[in-house]
Image (tube, rainbow, N blue to C red; front, side, top):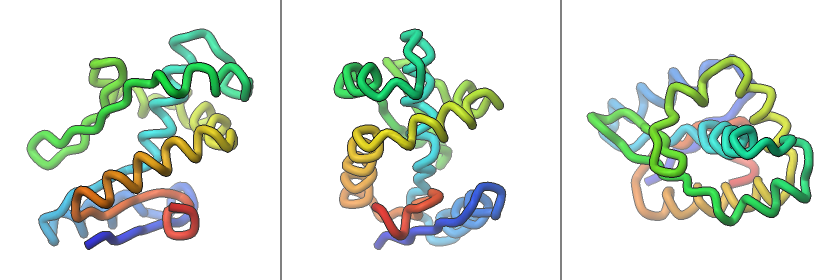
Length: 132
């Protein structure tokens, strides 16, 4: 079973999705965290998040892993837990910018679909019901 919740930033998607997943005892997947993680990788590499060609070059090598520890989603980049770092204010615009790159969206949507196929989950994202 998969439940998708979308809506604009600040609409309460995450709050509702987390609580619903908790009540149903299923996985909560914050898809926005995935975009933030790719944006962080871009920053680490010194690549402008708006440089589509350079982002496409490193994208296949992004080592992004999502794990659940005590029911909480943890995001790993190159083996490092970046769950807190991707929530820094600077990451919001970077994630928004990098999400406009079609190759990034395609790559992450494939990951999201694979996770949704593997687990019962509540997926939270701005366009999760229309795109994924």
